[in-house]
Length: 167
Length: 111
Image: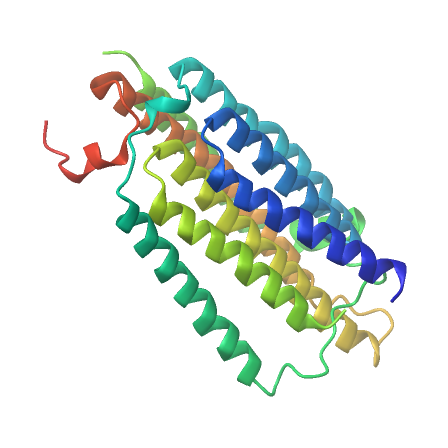
């Protein structure tokens, strides 16, 4: 068991524990902080896969911008722990059982596939995740989606302002 | 690392997100669980991209096979940022009219 595998299992355990704590915390601010932990763990996974550009973008966009937006909204609303109405116990149980059944079905499906046996993900090698190669592919083959995403951002900005405006 | 480990890990994260959407009633927590599901899918896309890249690297040393998966992840992040801004604006508007973030207020959109 080399150091990459040890790091993989540590980061996976951290991400799963953090995502469970997102669900279990009563305070929404604690949920946001645990979700930031999960995003850091996933960025560690990207670095293990040598996708360095995506690791940095994940930290800047998700853990930086989006989570700050969530924190801002939560603190704007002044939510505290007992503001959330309780769901019935059997409704929670039904949700957990249906989610668990979903997981069981997909895991048994993956266990039966023979195409995936022996396939490995290339760790800490390969240079397609570096910013030079990604930039070349982005501005040669994906120019049109890139420009369309700028229009998407403009429309999202206009939409957020129009929806959030006090009328 | 075998690709099955990545698949099981991402399936676990995705299922935790599904359970969160089904069990919590706070609209902001539900939204955060959707972000969790998006991140699980992103990680799986990168793992598959590296899988194809590793398979193509054996025959051609200068190949860029699998780079499309990482660009898809980049575009998913772009769309998620736009989605979060609009979604949080909708939640703020809902809070302003009902003084609650309970998603059960949304089962009757009239008034």
